[in-house]
Image 1: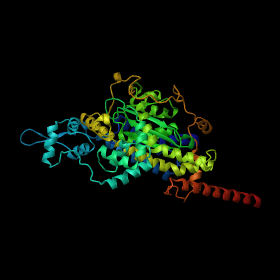
Image 2: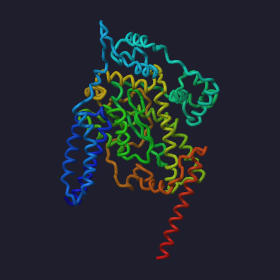
Image 3: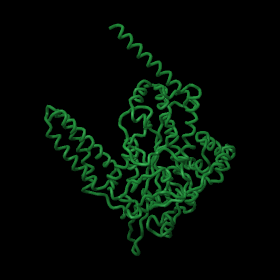
Image 4: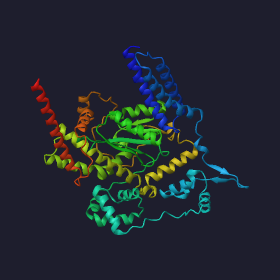
Length: 513
């Protein structure tokens, strides 16, 4: 086999292996058809590998390739020939000599109740009556009273609220309560408001003045419709924030900062979420080119007739736009002010490659840490229009109902006849500000210079990789007690020194020659 065909085969084999690995990682929630397709493709790869010319690919290399293929084949074949039982059979009974008694997972019942769901809602999701839940709880000695508030005195509470307010200075009492819930502290909303008033009275007044009206929204349930979008408030400094929420529950599916908004980057985040939470029935996004690959993936999964991807303007994607308002206050505004401070004080010139790459390496992880905290707080904050339930409680309850009805690993969405161009549009929500988003689907440029001109990136991957190598051994994540500003300045200095040293060595080598 000549070089070019061999290379083409190896690249295709790598693609097939990556797709098969994703399916293996998704077991037992993978589609049977997808597993069978992967088995056929892997079998073909294995066959071709065994026939490759020994001069082109040595025997030991071929053995390694075959072993890798067989490692993927084993769990896929096991899944095909011994599929897991259907989720609809989860609710079982036991013989008692009389009427059969339901077998319930009371640990799951307790978890759902602690998340804020009522026993009536849990009973409906599990397909039993509320009295059945109470009988099982009584038999196991489980308390059915409301979850008790955490015992914590005002001084300790004020310390925790002050720390949250310091790290997230623009959030209100509901999100602060979400931060506390994420830390395992369950308190009444009034008590959190009182604490926040004690430690940040002026901030509360400012936040109250800017509240927006809440929205009404309805789809079939969890994973029926995801909304995804990008936030570019920090774009000019090289940080792109990507987010996705489940429309039914408002649960944040992913929230991540990256160095670009390439379509491959968005697709990677999406597929990671799919591996954790299963395939959404549909996605809604805008006309940005960064969404093209996600659109291709979900249409390939569900088929073109399913209307799996819905595009529209920002005003049609209120669910995710509403999230950005809180994320900006909770996480991004702090760093916008830090970067503005650095520029105004002559410490940052975004046209300077050293400074802008150091900025990303020092602050990317810090921003992600704040985003992770914001995601946990958001997913545990209580929603007034949902009877004070949290997004994670709503999602898990809907998921439980879908499992009991047997469609969680299938299509969790609405019927195709209920899906039109306005599906998932929240008409009661506030209209976002007009922006420069395209109004039609465009292709994303692939060349670096074109991507930079289009605002897809600020730092190239090669620039960041080189900067990371130059700073090898330097702790860019060190807590300097000054929001990372000191670490950034040290990194810029260190990189300049190393670059000058390398330039000097190169000059000396030229002189010697």
